[in-house]
Length: 246
Image (tube, rainbow, N blue to C red; front, top):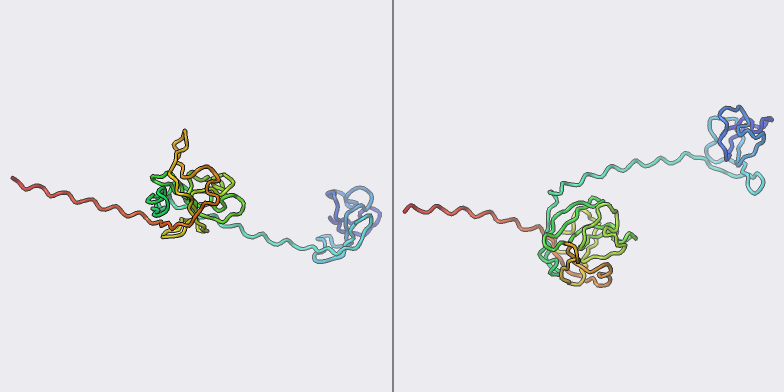
């Protein structure tokens, strides 16, 4: 703050750095202590602003005032806010796909959209295997690359990473991808765990495609999986012609 006389005894006007807020009613000695006790100051008759740019201030360090070059500058403007994320498309508009290849638990299974995760990516549920495919931007919350994952459990729809909440990258299969809109269609090389039968977790109706966390560690192998849209249903057969009159 600017004080026209920091002790009320005729000191020069100055800009002051102080630990306390100045009086808003006093005309001088704005800290009211009758002394010029302060952290730093620069003499100035300009009460409109402390001097911008580099100036030599008197700064109290180690028991005495010493000259220090201080630079006062306007802060950089804040960047404009990011535009809002576009709304996710209606779930009915997210097309299903069928996996071909890999274990029997994956081969021939159709996956349909079941919802959206916090990132806005759709996640899919298998029609017959009760497994899920979802996009996780960081599967253990420690900076892992983004990937599409085949998992026995549905992903969290509120977490922003580690969507199974295990703190580890445990899953039945995965493929690295920065594209959260859909797993890659066509034939791609996925990392797939051991071919195990689908199990059911005791006491629940949840199908399990893999053992508990840690199963996939060190056991993933390259397998070509093909993801394709399901074949359209054949049109119904025309009705049989009527029998001729007897």
